[in-house]
Length: 316
Image 1 (tube, rainbow, N blue to C red):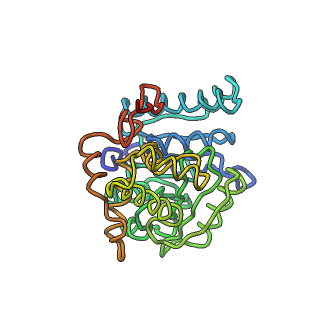
Image 2 (image 1 turned 135 degrees about the vertical axis):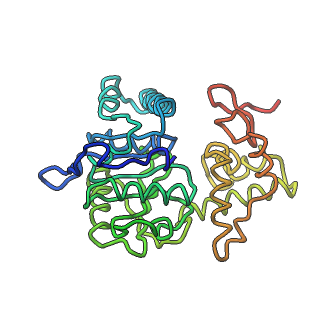
């Protein structure tokens, strides 16, 4: 995606302009990548009244991203009382484009593409060449080192990790990661934006891939997987025991299905390559499910089966 989005200011005839209000608040954010996380970020930002530039690689994926955002807002109407007029206002503040150069208009840019180190590093280099000199370049990297993926960036002091959790509009936490070269000014700008404008709670974590939440989550999922491969119990029994025994709203296997088994696998593969990462080595069962295309809820099948609406089918 990074190469497909790559462009230059000169070819666009654009100048580097700001998007800060008179108070120093951010009034425009660019989100690069319109997958589930990118859609969640666009919704989170737009719901606070801030304009969003949502960038995708082509018209097809851009249209899918906008449609996904619209469906997410429909769920907000059903569950949380969002009104139809509020939905229209949120969508109106999201400007979709396939032109990466439009990120030059934003003082805060968040890359939210797939969790592949090379792709993220390439995209950050492209954004470094395009964006305003004082723009914050935030990466959504979950299982990768911020310092390493920012190595090719000229203004590395402007790169910072902002790990939002799914669903971004509802989860109040953001893990903020300082890379080796992240400046105090960049950290303060990011923290102020996240706390004061997005109303999130910021937890600063060291630049250790996985941070806090992903490492703890994977530990739970891995033991759930092992209970299944060791034939301790069936998937239904494993999840029921965890939910009733510990008060969790959903069990580890269904939660993995909701997250996307392919996504979980990438996290585990990335972390397993880190020093001491042997504990995150993916189990063969997970690899086999993903290789077969059984990636969880979005595919209709993972550890459980799901209907077209995404509801889990109860085994007879």
